Length: 257
Ligand SMILES: [Ca+2]
Image 1 (cartoon, protein in one colour):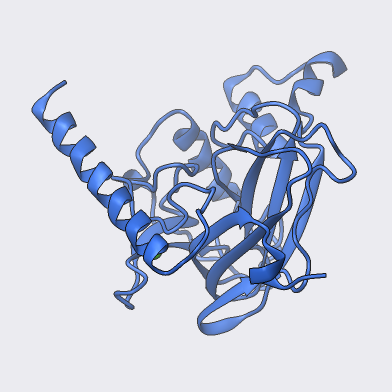
Image 2: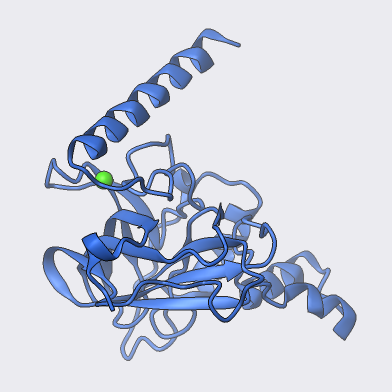
């Protein structure tokens, strides 16, 4: 192992230990979602999809308690985003992102009006019959957050769940699927979704689903993995997210149903 790699490993290990100690001290249950506070990473936060530097950003929040957080801008033209996402998917650094092309009213051709700015966590395994509690801090415009369930370990490559974007990539490469059989490769593999609505707020607010834990396997017992999907879309504008926590539901603590 090179010296540089060793130093990074040690730094990550220290970072995780500190976070764990803090959570134990606060009596919080373990966060099943690694790096939900977005403190670890180099160019992009670890354990999540890559930022793109155009519609998704990894930023230092002005509140030192928040440290690093995610910022989204849904006021980006879809055509510019698709062109850039193709390069991101090919491995280009988000640091090389182009300047945003100004958008025009009524902005229906933006990510806000079309695809939204999807941002996915990596997949984590879940236990059958268990119930889960999702909380996160957000500010900016109101958005949706999903917990999405899969029967097998899903592909977590960039845009893996964005069928229209993947088809655009194939078109650019000249390998658009010519028939139904190949098109089926783009059909989403998730079998379950639970939603959390986030209100608009100028300051950081903590959100959870009121009195309702997530039960991925209640009606879909095949679910074995989940991913968190942060999904800002309309209105066109800025959104911020931090401290995404997925824990096992505890009626004593969370007080639902
Ligand atoms: Ca943070």
